[in-house]
Length: 128
View 1: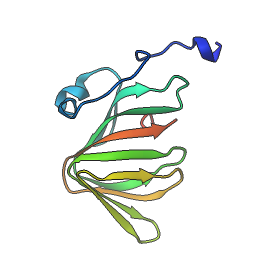
View 2: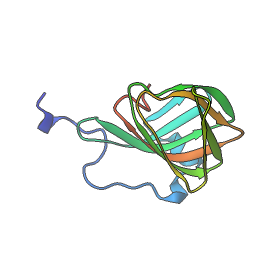
View 3: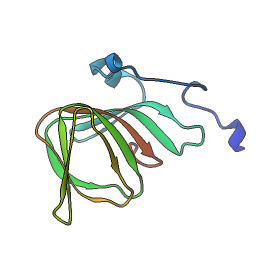
View 4: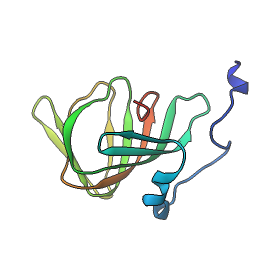
């Protein structure tokens, strides 16, 4: 199939997720991906499937995270997250913070309770 005629799973044109939409209801629509204690509700996939965006939530967790083969951007809506790198450094991301996790990063994803954030993943991120 030619790239210009690829069917789109989402409407063409601008899209948004307003703060009020990042509630429980967003996790009941099509496109939800679940991995253990985490859920990603897809709001958009790019035309050529190179990235996806949506709302992510996770209950308390402490587990390994390997971002190969994707990059991730997140904007924290609730809770807090600590990213503990294999080299012993750590980064706290709190409500209102934006964070980036680059392809190939390895470490631990640590949350004390429920967290929600807007997320954008390059190809292969949320669908893993």
